[in-house]
Length: 430
Image 1 (cartoon, rainbow, N blue to C red):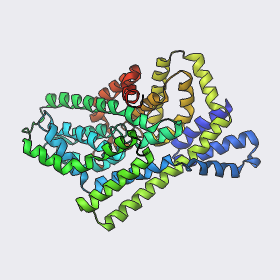
Image 2 (image 1 turned 45 degrees about the vertical axis):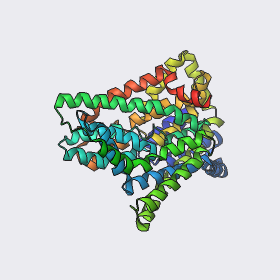
Image 3 (image 1 turned 180 degrees about the vertical axis):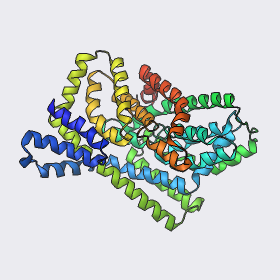
Image 4 (image 1 turned 120 degrees about the horizontal axis):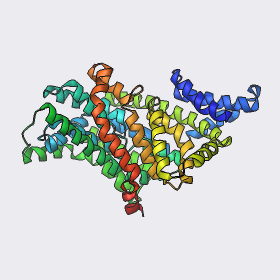
């Protein structure tokens, strides 16, 4: 029990004090080793070996590729093309640009795999377009923030790659399992946009002519093929998810440099530099989490948690509901990626003892953590949107409150009805 307190409570305290995630994980792990072995006998060589082992993974090569794809899409003007396609599709609905905002995020999700990339890149374009059309800044920001959470749900998804690597689960299955929940998210958010738009009397645009739709689709067709290349390539067995990320990256480079010619070498070097910084920070967290996971296993902390839950919760459904609440509480204070590294090695062995499919649980966990991205006090997407709009944080939170309703409704659906999540993996992967 003492080990659990040091590892988990100690980590939370370090994170709340502002210690970087990687250092907090390494420090809490070292504290456990010092407590059990003596602080004069902490195995430094073991710590260094386990941290380096954490990044020695072929699967994790997909992360820098997807990060680079997201930055390329934002910098090469491809976001504008995606937004125009969405505008011609649903811009004529009541509160049209609110619906465009959601659909554009669904389309862009298949390229970036990141909520922050969606909010910081496409989000800035969406908010400006909505404000220019007469929508209040608060409503525009709330729709943008909530729709950005679709990015890591609809494949490809950086959190799905991380979860699959940590849980030893099929990334292809997680990608497929996320499609229907992602579509449900989009539909739920559009319903809420429609309700608010009717109540506030937001404007309606004229329906786009067929020629306008075909023109926008022609301009945006090439980038929108990116997720298709990834999914079809993986399911056909032509390449692995990691190889798919590199193929998609090469494809994006070709259309950015040779087809659209919307980016030059200097801009590309800046994109590479920013991606390298993001990748280094993420891999440092992965290295620290590898040591943390090893200490969890070494001192059987997972077994202690499993025994406690088995003694208090007997029903798999009750366990999922309890864990969703627990994950959400963690997501209020910790960003989604560090939370994945913290929770996956701790919870996956537990849910498997209850007969819960790790693919199903992975989608539930990622979905719940995405809600945390737009929930104070540590909502990364909220702070990104606040930086773009400059509006008060409290005002942004107040505007986003109605959009929690469809998100929590979809979360309950995927918990109560596992078939919604597992239908496509079972159908396609048998």
